[in-house]
Length: 393
Image 1 (cartoon, rainbow, N blue to C red):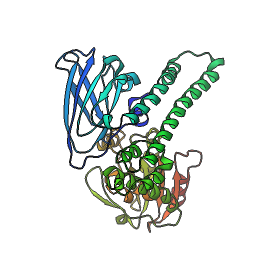
Image 2: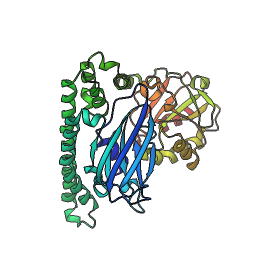
Image 3: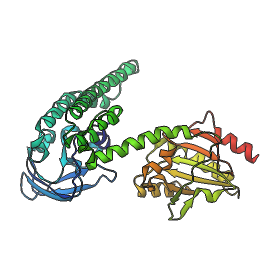
């Protein structure tokens, strides 16, 4: 529950406008308690989660620069000795907005979240970042309490229900503060529609329910900024995704696609006309999907040798190495494609059909029409198993 990846995704509310021409992001920092030779890391938000290493060359001082073509949220942290990113707590993380400018930092290695930040957008929008800091300060003691509750062991059986209820209430309190923060960001955008900075606030913050409404409220000039254009694409993808759920119906021809397999082959769905095709929607990141692999392997063992049957793994993966590693690790011998290899997200299979549950199975008949649908793991109602047995007797 306290893993760094989750913190970075859910708790970070900073970020910056995209730079039109790129530039250089630089940091000049005075960090008390930082010894010469110690290592500090800076991780950029995004699909690849790029991490750069900064080695302290002078006691209490670090300098860093990086060529940057777009502005990103970033997180600065030091790993505890023998620890990993999942061990990092809030007070060990400094969230930054990385852009085409130099930031001056002053703080303490043991309390990075309290580091003062000067320069760039922090000077031009100080009130905004001061407000975010107030929400972070309000969350901090609640999160520490939640940490403490999560670490408690050997809770007597008679007190476990009460203890779990306390954890839920404390977690709800954390999200209550987050909702207040999102409301503040919503109001900020609506009252600063002519400020290009609002496209940053809308892209990285704000409530998702109001994203379209707030985007439409932006001035025509702000809508031309790269982040505003990205927001427009987000909205279009979400609407296509939601509408796509209506396309997933028995008897409807499944949209043709051409994707590259994990072995580099071009896989075109229509080339399997004349066969029953089972599409397995999964991901290496999905625990239930991994648990379902033995079941899929059993289906492959039973029908894989038939000339009128094909099984295609439809992965949703951002990390292709993890995808290939999972296929090899679990000896998944059938055909595999990655839906994310379709760069136009509006044309991605998972978007067109609004696939939101993983794992899911969709069986197509020899004409390419949807014959059976099973969303999510459903051992109590194995729709696909029954349909395959009915077809192949």
